[in-house]
Image 1 (spheres, rainbow, N blue to C red):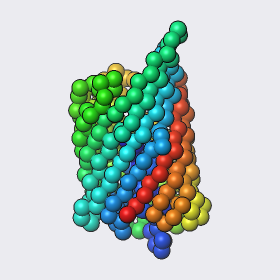
Image 2: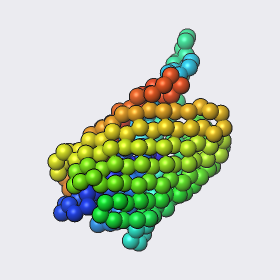
Image 3: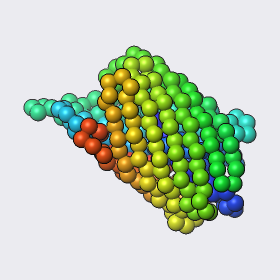
Length: 245
């Protein structure tokens, strides 16, 4: 599941957009306020892994439903509603598709000020994947993030996520920079540094993206990232939509 993005929620702005998680890697440092329900959908999110043979291409249609429970608290339910994977061997190809894993978590606003905001997200990972993608293990995760508003259009964020999927344990650090170009358009840059505590299979990548507020409650996004070293996943890219109700 994708974590992560609070570009448009500018303190003091009259028509601030909802604090969507898409499309950044990090956790948004704010919770839902004016809107009670948000639906975020990847269309899709893709990765290309060429670190070794075989080459693996994966398409994920990740769905995230967010529900405001009380002020400063929301429930997040995520499901990989459709996954397609193509595995390119030297002599032949193999592909498979089906459901991916799911998650459920609670997010809390730790601090909500004019210049700085922080949030905490914790929950469970559930193995709901089809046979070809399942490892038979459930897990857990916890993430914390902080966001600093430099002015009414620029923001810095730092996010940390620790995850145990039942077979591997990893920690991901995500610094990011966000700039609001207008009421409709915004850009961001981020980097993800993931360390696998079990086998050292780290994944370090960086990139950025753009978002467009089609209406005050509908956001479209596009992003791309590339590997920072030869041991990381080569490319990540995706399109998505987020709608607030």
